Length: 416
Image (tube, rainbow, N blue to C red; front, side, top):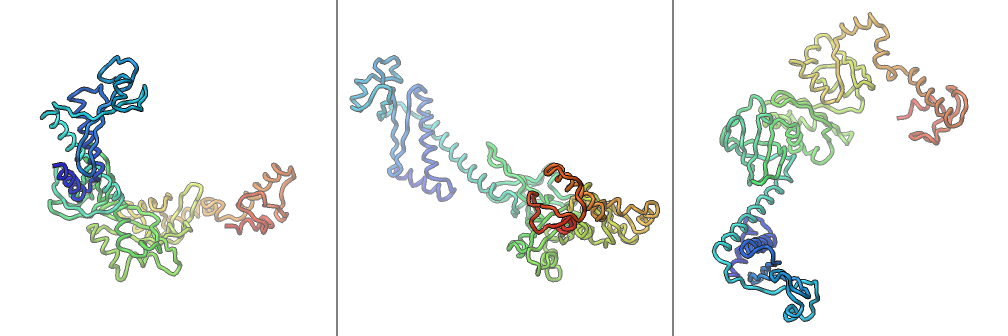
C-alpha cells in the first residue's frame, strides 16, 4: 500500500508538474495538523514520511526537565535517558508513537488538508507559468461574453478582458480565437487572476517583434508607440545598422509584414515612423502622412511649431485632431500646427517671432552670450579673475565634458 502511495505521488509529479518533495512535505504537515487537532496542541509532534518505502512515522517530543510540572510536554531526566542515554536537561526527547485512536475523523481531516495542499501547489504552478508570460502575447479562445466582460481560455488558466481593455467596434463571440496581451497576473486564493488586453500598446509592439526578424535580431529597435486602439497607431523605429532602412524592414515587401499586423488588429491603421535624434526631423516624421515645411522647436518648453502648406493643414491635424495628438504622444512634445499663410501673418505682426520662439537654438549670438556668462562665473568662483573675453584661452580641465583640445569659447559651440 505504501509503495503504491509513492507511485501515486510520482504520477502526480509527472501529470501535473507538482514537485514530489513538496507533496510529501504537505502530507507530513497535514498529518501533523490532524494529529494536533485530535490529541491537542501541547505536545511537540513530528511526522516523517519515508521517501522510498512510503512508511509514515509519528514522533512525539517532551522537554527534558529535572522535575516534571506538565507530563504532556515534559519528561524527567531519568526516564528520558532510558530512551537516549546522552540526552541533557533542556533538550527535547523524541520517541516514535503509534496513536491508537487516530480514527476516521482524524484521517478525513488529514485527507482534506492533503487535497488542499495539492490544489495550492497546482495554483502556484499555474501562477508562475503565467507570470512568466506577463507582457507577452498569447492566443486564447473566447469561452463566454457576459455583462460586457469577455472570458478567454488561455491554456491552464482563464483570462478576463474588461470593457476598458476591449477595442471599441470589435465584437467577441464564443469560440472565437484571439491574440491578447497578458496585462497582469495576480495571485488569489482561488488561483491566478489573469487580465488580458486588446488595447494596450504592448500588443502592437509584440506583434511587430514576432513579424519583423530585424527587431528580434536587434538590428531595428522600437523607440516608442502611440496608440488609439481600433483607429490608429504610430510606432517609431530606429536602425542600429546604418545600412538598414527601419521603416522598410517593418513594412516589408509590398507591405506584407505591416499588413499582417493590420489584419490581426482588424484594420487598425499603422504609421511606421523613422526615429531621429534631431527633434525637428522626428516631429516631421511623426506627423506623417502630412508633409511638414519647417519645425521651430523650443526645448525649454518642449513645444514646437510645425508649419505645413495650407492644403496639408487638415491632414496634419487629422480627423478630430488624431494625427497631431498621436504625434505629440509619440515624441513627448506639444505640437502646434500652423499653415504657411497663418505663420506668414504671425511673422508680419512680429518679424522676430522665429528667433524669439526658437530662442538660443536658432540664435548663435545668444548662445555665445550665455556660455560667456557661464565662463565668467567659473572664473569668478575659481580664480577670482575678471570677465572672460571671447578669444581668451581657458583651461577646461576641471569642467566635466571638456578636454585639453578646447581652446576658446568658439570651440564650445562645436562640442556635441
